[in-house]
Length: 161
Image (cartoon, rainbow, N blue to C red):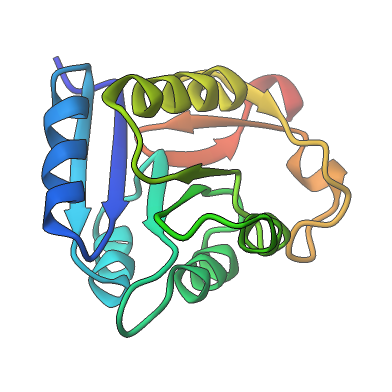
């Protein structure tokens, strides 16, 4: 049976990638990893995940730059920013740039699983969700009312057609 969800983790710390993989691979999800922003964006092009975790501070492309590029190309992609440099201003900036949530490091396996569960409950991986923002990269609320994740792709849900 294929995994229920596909999660991409972009972080320059190998220990974070290994830990996230170990925690998440034991559930029913496929875990993809990338060691920097450029590799993460390439991985995103290869296989569209349901959820992306991106580190805020990385050499080369920062997490915010990666987030901006994801938003430009995949406006409905759910991105959670993770960082060891959590401040109120960095969290606010990430959210303004389109992050779904902000998870400070270090986090426990339980905190990581809880974050994914909350996200899946909200977006309905394998189901539908209602998007309530009125301006999301030029798309209006009516453009984004009901979408469904089907095989890793966001498509307009049948009942909204």
